[in-house]
Image (tube, rainbow, N blue to C red; front, side, top):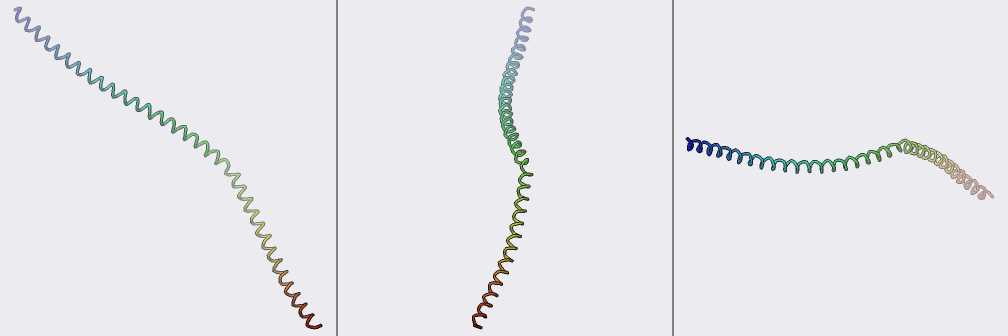
Length: 121
């Protein structure tokens, strides 16, 4: 019976050894998985930092746009004032053109009258 007991113990030891080898394989796979997870987490942290930088840049851009947008009413007012000034100057120029045309007509008429008077003398 002692031989049979030894065979049974050896058999059980071999089963335990097989299980230990399986566990070691599982542990090695888990270590590999953990290493991959660490790499993935590091990549995610880098991406998160990059997104933070981009977010900061976008916030700055939005602040600049808001600042520029706040100036729009002033620019519109200045454009309207300039347009009004241009219309006034255009009207004045048209009036001056009319005056010049009248003066030119009078000058031609007066020259004709002077020429007529010289001819009569």
